[in-house]
Length: 317
Image (cartoon, rainbow, N blue to C red; front, side, top):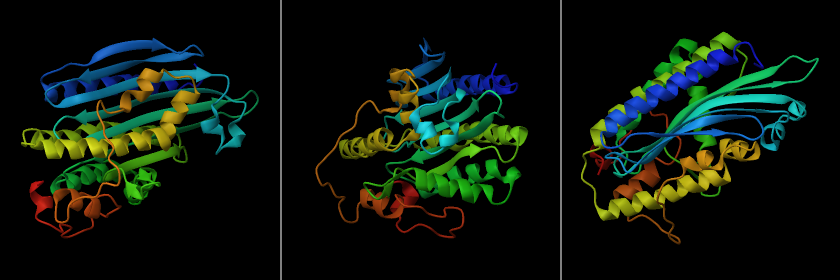
């Protein structure tokens, strides 16, 4: 094994995949995850688990991968040319959930570890990950709950950790070509090694373990909310933004494709249905306008005393 502690990370990630799938299948109650094991020709492989056409989740996946090789892909070395020529191991779990009900947010998360080695030189390693929420008809209390769990996961690691990684998430999931955020953010961190291995690994575990606490209460509160075809059409339109981000900006998608990962597993993150309309604008005074005006931009959700600009935000209309 390339790194004496890589096995510890891998053991945690495999267990996390099991726990996520078990809890998500239980809340769905109508479908189960199907596993697909795969091998990467250049080294390594993974196990993809996908749920489809469930009571809650129209499509979702929780994927584990461990890939390795003699050369890091260009997406990894472009910003860090000192890594050129190093062999690597990359291990991680990523998950994406696309509920059918427009009142239940889409959500994404991942936790990962990479180590790059070269003979005669010290290994270079880092952790990365996070989770983010993409509501279509957001409810203020749900977004505050989401960020409160994220803050609490960061709290043992220092007062400035949540604000730093919250801001990084807002910046990372910004669609530059649309000048809007993909959703309401959460946490995003990368290149984490300055705390040393044990503390960095503990932080990765804290983030991975916090996801279900952040997401499942929102799912349970909103899954039985009635929805109309108009709301479904808006959900599909906003899913188009999700596709745009993943295919244009997401570094993880690019790393997976350039490193020879399994395309079906990498593109598992795509929603089953999405739509695009030319020059669409929300109706004035509508819930859709509220989303654009009040949610698709960075906000200090936990520092705001009121934060509700419309009654719509309270009841999810």
